[in-house]
Length: 470
Image (cartoon, rainbow, N blue to C red; front, side, top):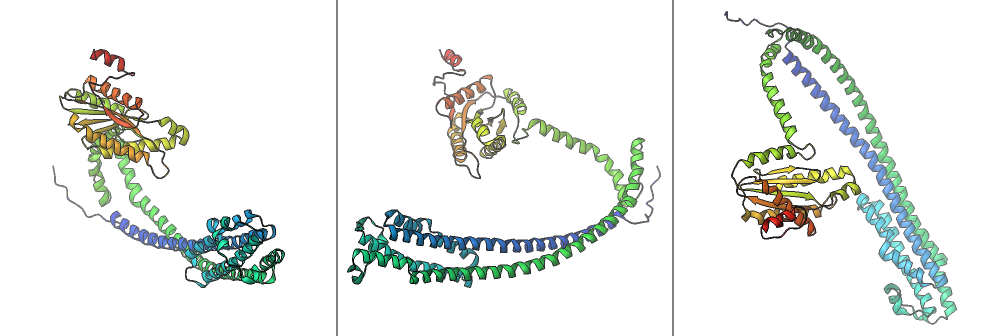
């Protein structure tokens, strides 16, 4: 055979053209992503300004309604002397606390700000007004002859002046009404309203300024995006043309060679010479595909652990080997209630979680498997009965996590029956583990027990078991 002489290849090298287009695309992509991030940030700024305004309106409503509610209950008590209104008043003060909630909520947005100070002043004035309201309620309670020990601490501890104590019942009631209905009280309420109005005016002004600035920046960023998208479109058209001229046409030659069952010619661009050499790698790709298909045939598609078919194959393999083995048969307790109560999607999540915990809890040399709907098994290699306490601790740890779930997962538990063999996977091993599992279920589920020759089993396969013992 004659030696091939490498001739110089003329024309555009696909590799160089590809690098150039990748570079241009990356630059455009980075610029576009940057512009998109800026646009997103501007949008978030607008959204944040709106959220802040809504939150501040909510704070305004909380403070206003809380203060108005206190006024209403104080006035109702002063007028009617019904203790229920006093109880409503102090429920708002100590439990509902709408005014305090408004200040705490606003602090997250405007801490140490003049806007925040306006709301604090409103709360301060409202608290000062409470002193007047409590004093008035004390006067009414005193005039009505209420048992002071049964009144809230604030009312009981309010000290009436000697002048007020000297008033008659009617005069005292009249003065109490004046304290919560009179001009002085009304002026104080208007002062609180003034603080709230200044608060809302400041919020509206700050929100408008923020939204105008954010909208201006958003428009500028979107203009940049439009320019970059146009450039990216032109670059894509150029790329398509290069693909047709430098890749598609040479490929047509190779397709023709494959259809005619000919050897691929080492021809075309520099890169296409390597394409012919890659043809020999098809066998390796086929081997990879076969391995993937084998994996899919042996593993459960939901949980990712081995399935019933693969588990049966393992039983046959270890049946012929006289090795110490352990077998756990596992049921998810009351799994039907999970499917019925939470839906099959949540049920699938529970099965995935159980499978993952079994994989994580046992050794790499052990074989967790899903052998049924909510039934699992674990084949333990090189293990003896002396290690059953360790295995039980693992199951207890798994059950503890399953019984204290997070992220909305339902509470479940596992019932586990186990057995050991020193002669490989015998025909009796599965039966013994199944009897132990049934014994766990008979005693309340959520636990792990191992087959014990001295224990008498009932039900399931228990009758034949007891007969064998006899």
